Length: 152
Image 1 (tube, rainbow, N blue to C red):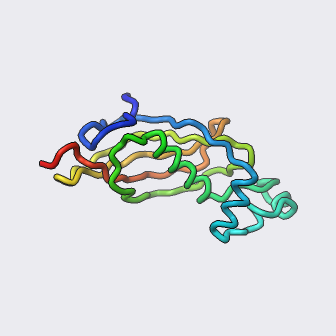
Image 2: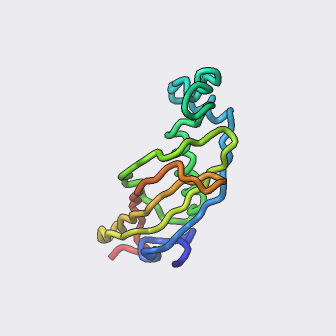
């Protein structure tokens, strides 16, 4: 399978193309800042004593924080990709915790392309977020509207 190019238009993307991004370590500051930014102060993310009594045994990152960082990792890896707009997400599942100190990365594979004419097309990808141990934290299917090289 081909690696997903970091530069390109809708025509350049091949079904089956894959990418693996660089890593990003989740810190305590990330949890604190995300809680302040979003007002999501649920104790599983913000209270070490409370979280120690849960099935996780410690605080874990907000699922949306991990997803947001993963989307950023994906876009920074594909900075030259001619994305017009994020088109949507399907089948989103948070399948495992991300703990303080975990390093996440994204593995993605192009599943299909839907030509939308002169404006480009929608590219559908399997999008998986994994930690440094290879454990899956998030699984979803993403869609992005990608520009065509030149109008028809």
